[in-house]
Length: 329
Image (cartoon, rainbow, N blue to C red; front, side, top):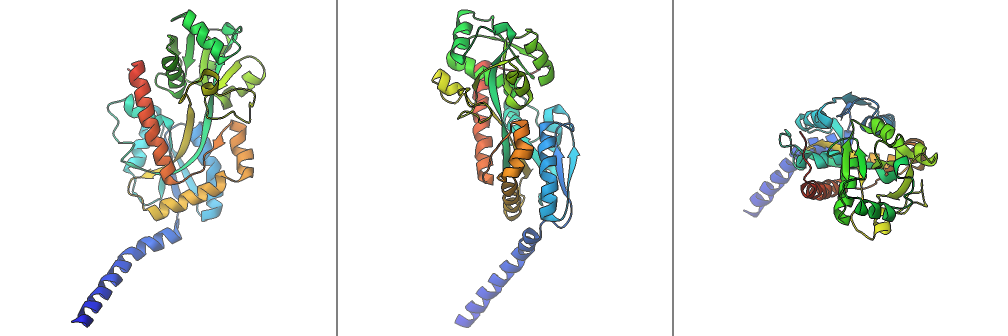
């Protein structure tokens, strides 16, 4: 009887190993053909830039290319839908961003659940944001002065953004709510027209990503009052953080970007992709050559770190949107 039990147990273990072995071999050999990288934005944007920067290095590691596929439209939601429907085998990945954490609080008809239909793989980097004023508020020298001016002129201080519900918009909305000031939001169709409006005095202020605006800041055409990060930036070390300047907490706006895969992608493969991306984004040469010129800050971490960031920001900005009564048409 004991021999029969031992034999049965051995058969069961062998069967389990046989069932698992294809997955183990798959993870060990991954990839054995090209990987598709889905981008929800047009070529040339931040999503596209980062994946195309990673692609050639991953190809050297993997022996197979990352073939970038731009599926633009609906502010990235078409690309995300494509990614959500892909086979969960590791051969389709895509770029997810803070915008994807914000969208569920703005739109009711999203055909996927950002928290359930995707497997976080790895954060890549974040774009730090900064509070700036243009020539229309040339007399303002600090974030404290800016808040006091807005308090004394309720509804008269204008701030621009790249669109309703964008990180530009929410970065300023959370500060206004925290300090109890009323300002007028002026949305534009992207950061380029916003920059023109700021420089021309059409709008007074904005919360903007450092990279696209650093030249105007360094030239003195825009004044940087405070960065929306947890510590000062190496790029502008003399500019204080908004929380330190105003004595607040949680007024950060770090527009992160990372790699997502379809839900149920095997964790062995997820961990392999994560490990390879970590090696790249912690390489000083990659940081200097690819991230620093765009003012990106690397964000090393595990798949769980990315999942935590996504869920935290989803909850945080849902509250900001609710309190500011932000709606989209």
